[in-house]
Image (cartoon, rainbow, N blue to C red; front, side, top):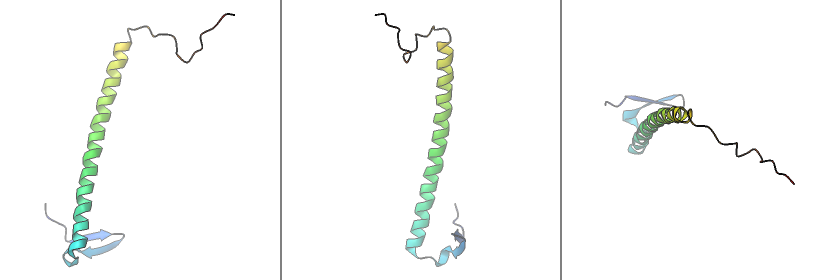
Length: 79
């Protein structure tokens, strides 16, 4: 992938060829991090889709099962 000729950073334009090695290294670091962020976002989307499918499957599996009494509801006691 070809590098762009210019970098726009904080509303200023820089010729990449004129930047020193440290600045170019930081640009490369940002590109790597951005790529990892995109990959992680894609993975999260995949995991979210899988989770939704598992919830749907659980809902269907539980549709035929009678639920127990609510655990938060206090059981009446006699004195």
